[in-house]
Length: 274
Image 1: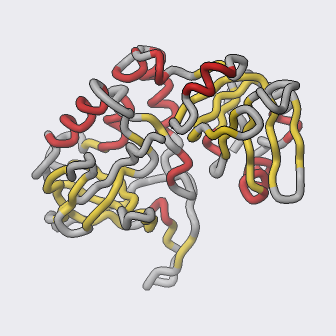
Image 2: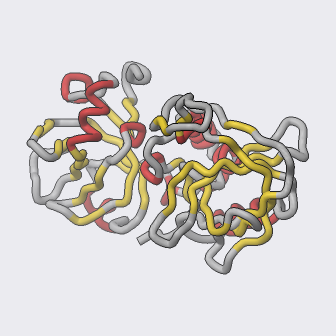
């Protein structure tokens, strides 16, 4: 399985504060009495000290961390290029927004912006724009950077970085043998939703008529409710071509789970309403 999720240790050393604008987030109490969301939490000064042997960032003040909403390529040469880009940022005055999430290894999920340049440099945006990272909306809930999907689409259309490599391009769900070869990897798939099975605890998007061979997307109840509230329910998706992303697993053919609505994009008729 692709365990190439970013770990990021970063060092904060600049006396500025900044909030990264984002579209949504869970409200949390603030000292002022006004709600502060995960997506608009205050950013604090820090600097990148180094990368760990696994390729994670090392920040001086915050400790272990990973860049929110993205994952690095699986292997060379694209992973090496992404790590080189990050190493070039070492020592730059930066603002780090701790989104409040930590994974099982204790790595904080962060957004980082270099402030020693004009304009300031958003690290996640820059890696995605250069084709040196893939958007993974499922790493954090809520997903605060929907603009990454548009930036990624542009890089993909221009065949930049990893998007020039066939193993990263979206896969057709009607190629079960190719899908089985990618089990355990984070992939993008494209296909038409043939049927939808809504159950009490989860919903299944089916892409074929042979349950033991075809691809399926599994959606937990809470995520399906969020999607339905956004206009992404059964009526909006049935019969539509979509692009989805996740870690592929063997399950009655192949499948992956969607835990954040932004892990699915509709390819026909424009973007779904928010």
